[in-house]
Length: 258
Image (cartoon, rainbow, N blue to C red; front, side):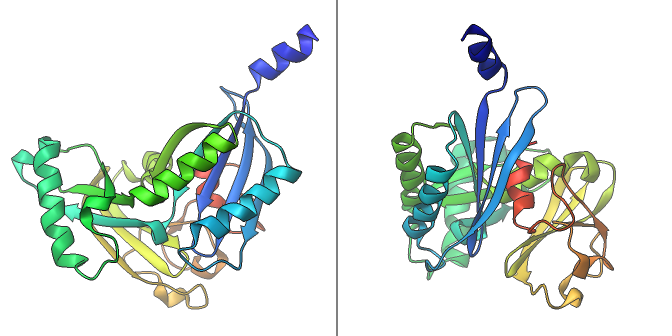
């Protein structure tokens, strides 16, 4: 019994869940210092694009068949996040100023949004002198529902983070080395992130289709996730544990796992 307990303590479990466009991507990881992916799956649902409750029901069913204990990482896909790039201003060092500027830009770009600005939680990228600051907005209702699910399943939440920031942190070793454009593909959207030695300089979102490789920007330096239809554009980036035949959505879950 003591050996079994010690082995379990040395190999804590963790669940990484990516809320993708039309499915959840899930992976179970063990090990603290050298994480090992034990299970991974994509859970398609019949739920509507923004029906988080329906998607979590699919995760419930999967967890009933594949019990996991420990911590959970929630990686939030583009359907549940609003992004805004705040132009450089010395006052960006103040989160209060950054919040006020985000509110003004939100009113310009998302005036028709069904969720008012006050009902979002904000995540700010670190301030970099002379560069814009990226802001991510996640609805309070989404965070509340994920927190309630975690509590009911007795998971400790490690993070609730936008997919862009999780992928950026995982791929930073590549983008910090020079100037270029990172193309992040999330379902029917492509996030175009221009950077200079790891500092974001421009950001935009455009439509994307996996059936058209021409949808990748010509100036893309790096493309993520790796996908054969996009192989002709940019340098394809991969993460440990993502096999060539794996669903591309698993790549985002694995960004938080390994």
